[in-house]
Image (cartoon, rainbow, N blue to C red):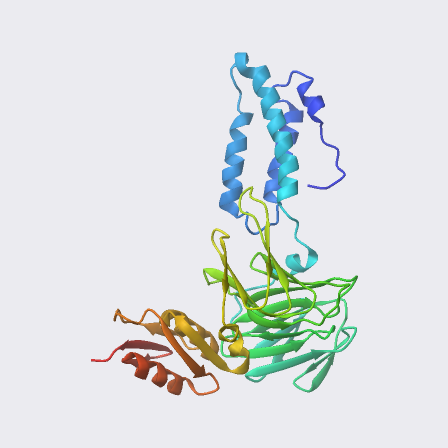
Amino acid sequence: MKRGKKYPTLEDILGNDRTPEDPVLRALAGSVEQVIRNAGNETWDSADKAALWDEIAPGLAPQPVRYRYLYLKVAAAILVLLVAGLWYFLPRQNDLLRFARQLPHDQPLTDTRLLVGQHQAVVVKGKNAALVYAGGGTGITINKDTLSIAAATYNTLMVPYGRRARVQLEDGSVVQLNAGSRLVYPAAFKNGKREVYLEGEAFFDIAPNSQSPFFVYASGLVTEVLGTTFNISAYPDDIRRSLVLASGSVRLHVPGHGFSRERSQLLQPADMATVDAKDGGLQMSRVNVAAYTAWKDGRLLFFNTPLKDILKKLTRYYNIPLDLASTKPGLETCSGDLDLEDNLDNVLEVICATNSLRYERYGQRIVLTEKE
């Protein structure tokens, strides 16, 4: 639905005898449907849109004559309010989000890859990639090699399981990407806007700039900062998204569900915001920041963490599927400190020794079971 297009007013509709087949009413109803279909907010999935349209559509069916005039006046008023309300409640996607969501997600990767725009791809070798953008965004240093690019392009850094990457953006902000993550960002920030899109997990160290706030979009969440350090985990297959603040302050924006309004939460250092991926439920807690940021230094700290969650993190880090096939009591949570620079066998030996488990390899898969 385009702004500026002329639609019939409430007076136009209520001041006349309209039938359900009247083109004015149908045009207005069509505009409601168009708003719903083009809402562009990921919290409005196909089921949400279909359910809402199912509520509106029956009103277009012919009604008994005795109810016609009252019905038309009420229905028209509701339709007008829906048009205005949906336009207000459903935020528009910006160019960054539109670009990010049209990128392919089904390409298997073995090495880190940088996409410049949509057509130029650069394979970045090594377990830990390092990229540094020059001021103005016209050049990149990739593992000591220099590449010239157009500053106006969006770049996408894709990191497969078993790899990590560090990128210094052209404004001096540094982003460290964990395994199985992707970051979409402009080669150069323009017009006072600093925006990036994240899937997966990353630690951000944002260069201060009071005139240009920094926004991170991740699975529907929006984090707004001026200059600070924080960790975001927003993997598509996780049931919860989390934001942990290490220093400074940030404001987290959580989109509304249905007709509920967006919520915002200001975080202080050591705050963690956890958002349910399904219903948008927000929980706040105080945490040990190191437990959520140590991965960038090659360590995994965990305190009363479910063993299955630990194995999931190790699966991403080493790019080898790890499964737990044990119902032994006491395995619900674990605490410890693992050196991720060590090989996987040594890491698994530590886990098994402290939990009376053993592990076996089945092709490319490893299964942990109870010791006999």
